[in-house]
Length: 358
Ligand code: ATP
Ligand code: MG
Image (cartoon, rainbow, N blue to C red; front, side, top):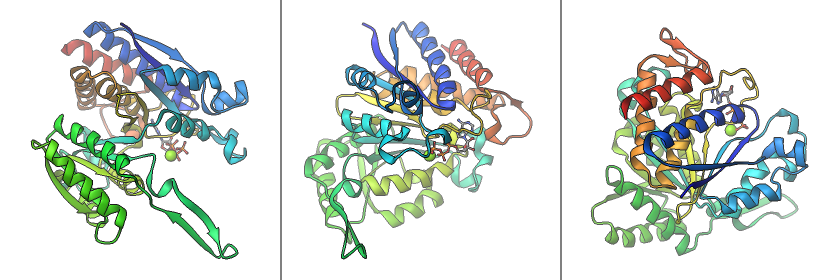
């Protein structure tokens, strides 16, 4: 049976890097005998221009019927002056919410060929391989009330979690740790926050079901420090929405360029939305020079998390690593020597490494 995948290229370089993802997935399909049905739809600024709505009904419906959604990027200067609820970004938030994608997965992996790009010392970041799992639909960003008080001179936000919301994200984290190096770090602020004490309680209960996974608890301030001083002590990290937002951006400096990073937003049944961490990069859009690797690695995450194709995902990741080791680099990677290439050549080189290895 064909795997049903919705493609949302979106705006700017999103369109360009989506082509790369399609080519790579088609290569994997041929090599491993899989069949994907791609359904392309409009989102973001592109959808505003064509249909007057950043998330047309047709797009939302297609996403609700898909097993996985691949997204390029949305946004750009052209739409910056629209009111907040009509902007391109609204389309993306709408999909995440409508699909109930509560777990945001951000792998942070250092590639040997790029370790010099990071501002951190090479001996610190060398070999880092961390998966940060951030709760995405609860916590401080969604708690009610969230309002101004006392004639606007005071303000309140609410950090609210229900037990089931913590249980499902913690389950996802244990399951992911099982497929990796079997270590889970739960990050909280249990010395101060009641919601963190509930979080810790749930992790302690859940660990009985996963005796093969080792667990530790870390306060978020200590976690922020250790991420950049001893990243090698982490395998999977799980944390609530706000802490995860901050820690995942911090961790991205371990890898060098924004153009390298993939992400996934998933729910328990495997349905997920996969997108590069970078935005639409209007400054380089349309010039064929965008780094496609964040998008390609997002497609690999889709294979792993929505379709259980672990071997195929690992194959793409190792082809990316080989390609970088061969000296291929796009302009954002700031390398001297080697081969400076554009989006299409970088994609071709990755594909070449997939087909020669398997
Ligand atoms: P957004 O609001 O859309 O998220 P942003 O401020 O996060 O935008 P990006 O669009 O991600 O910004 O771009 C930030 C910088 O990184 C830009 O200079 C852009 O050209 C560069 N950049 C981002 N992604 C890539 C990529 N895939 N390849 C090369 N350069 C990139
Ligand atoms: Mg951004």
